[in-house]
Amino acid sequence: MKSMFRLVISAVTVVMLIAPFSPLNGQIKVFDNGNVGIKYTTSTPLSKLVLNAQGYSNYDAHFYSGSRSSSGGTFYTLIESGTGSALNIYSIHGQTKLGANNYLVGVRGAVTNPTALTVGRSYGIYGIAGNAQNGYNYGVYGYLYGANNGAAVFGTSTGDATIPGKYAGYFSGNVWVTGSLWAYTITQSDERIKTNITPLEISDSNDKIASLNPVKYNLKQREFTNSDSTTVQRLYDSESELFKKTKYGFIAQEMKEVYPDLVYIGDDGTLGIDYTGLIPIMVKTIQEQQKKIDELEAIVRKIALQLSVMPDKQ
Image (cartoon, rainbow, N blue to C red; front, side):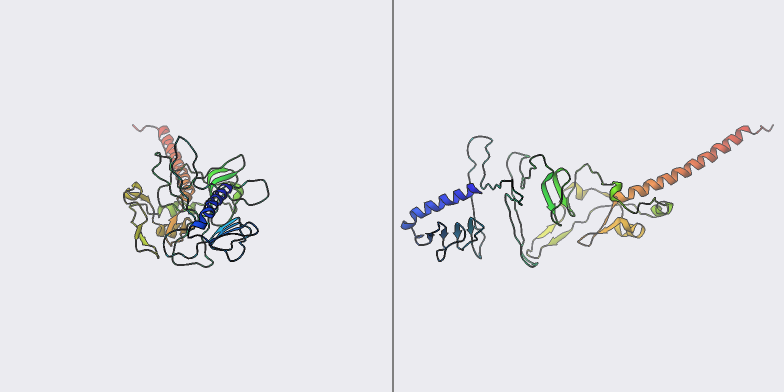
């Protein structure tokens, strides 16, 4: 943040030089302790540089805009694309040095309210990127540096978590995806994280699985309107393969009657099926069916052997 602070100080210096010849005269003041106030000259600022407010002693610069009646913000920077090639050009560069036992943050964004509201939208960090070289546009970019475990992008609904390896993304909490998820999946199934382990019974498979009703279907388009907008939004891209193609599966309400432990209720009230949980049930059913096939084959072989040794009747 030092580079940004130097930029602000430079701008303030220019303004101070021209202040006697402009309408800003009397709106900028350098106090006895060296702190600078812009549109704040009534008392000594607590921050080294302030705009419209006294600031805070634990922050070097404090800009306050107050309530707005139009779109805008407190701080805006713009830098041109530059010349040359493969240059790293930053509009704002925030950096914190490691070394102490502190919680260090390069860039922090926060939009909160003490109580829950029914209007408005909040974005802690809002990233937009586009129209650079095809395939190299990142709205939010995270990179895990160094040798220690961690994640380039970490999301949580429960607080900090100890990350056991090195990941591009790590999420502590539920994750919702409305489009396709392309991945090589591995389901955690270590015995050390399980309890109450018991073998499946025949009653868990044969009779129940025979009562299931496999179906094919298409997705319904789901539309919704946010409380702060009249614009109707659609959950699915109507032109996507995900929406257009026929699906094969089960109805969750029917599955709940047969295998209730495989059905979950989402936060929006819709039901979902743990299809992976059907695999051991199907394996158990196949094993039982194979036993019956083996028994029948043994009977057939026995009958065939008996017939082969019977004397021919003339």
